[in-house]
Image (cartoon, rainbow, N blue to C red; front, side, top):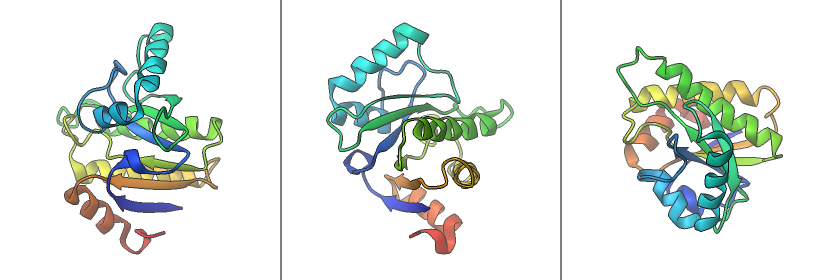
Length: 174
């Protein structure tokens, strides 16, 4: 089940929200900074422990932390690719960031998960291309071990919301 929402991902009461993180896991701009600010120091503390253990998070991968002060139990930090024209495997890396997030969610018994528009901000991934990859990848995963999961795509801006709505057609509210 996939549902489209417009708004602030940090306000959602779900089991997990996905953070469009960077490889350092130290917070940043956009949704990453908003999640770290709203969630408080507990998220950064767990990110620091992950950095000590494995040195950050590679592009296409994801790690999980507490939700801190957020109304969710977990934050899944997924690192999407920086857009470099499409010839550097960006499509596959973006799909892998979504796949890694869902795999972690399944491992942690997450039933409801919310995704932002990964890589479409400062990483400049073309928004329509990113939405297509996100929807295709999530639909494939919902046909497998994540079949009982409810997935929300949360668009902060009007442009991404309309892109997802047009691609989802009649499914937008499902």
